[in-house]
Length: 260
Ligand SMILES: [Zn+2]
Ligand SMILES: [Zn+2]
Ligand SMILES: [Zn+2]
Figure 1 (cartoon, helix red, strand yellow):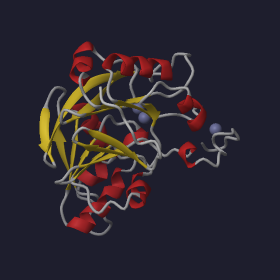
Figure 2 (tube, protein in one colour):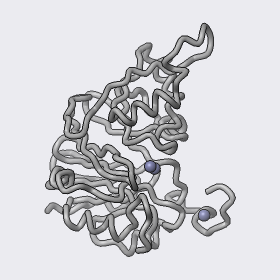
Figure 3 (tube, helix red, strand yellow):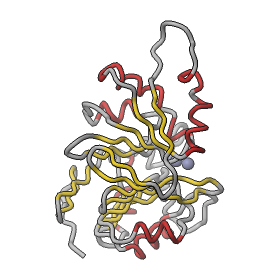
């Protein structure tokens, strides 16, 4: 964090260096980016990502959309506009913040070419050969979209409450990613803290539960050591491979995830 002298911000462990939350879902047919924060460009360069087929947004907070301008580089590379899917409320904010992308501003400059698609809660779409269901959860007073990929993977960040019907939709999935902002039990107005996120994982009982959206109050190694089995802290660059019944984590020595 800027202007912080704490031990985590000065840690030599790269897992304590956190850019804004985002995931890239890769299938046999393509790549889907979920959220587009200020470091999106650097994240995709670091991951050596050759192309992105679509972008899904969870909500329009700055840490999730302020990299959208850099999507123009994908159009330079492919010659095609970028398809962006999100709730109507999120798209309204995107059209406001990035208004210049949707007006004639004359020649020159290289604006991203974005094709926006409304994705309502409960709707399922097919992208890159995988079904993706959009579900609703709550982040303080804001509705946010969580995404369920196929019948295996749930991504639910920026969350302080999960409605029962969404919780039911999350059941039976192999991997659940859930946000938590602090490791202690002191409640936060718009995010789960770690004990609340672990309670969700305990109820859903996925084979692998990952925590994301952590602040510098998480020292990676010490907090992770306190977690139950197959509950882990995500970190920048972590790869989760889902191959049939096998779940492996790349960039890690402990890759065995037990079956339910
Ligand atoms: Zn710090
Ligand atoms: Zn947020
Ligand atoms: Zn956020």
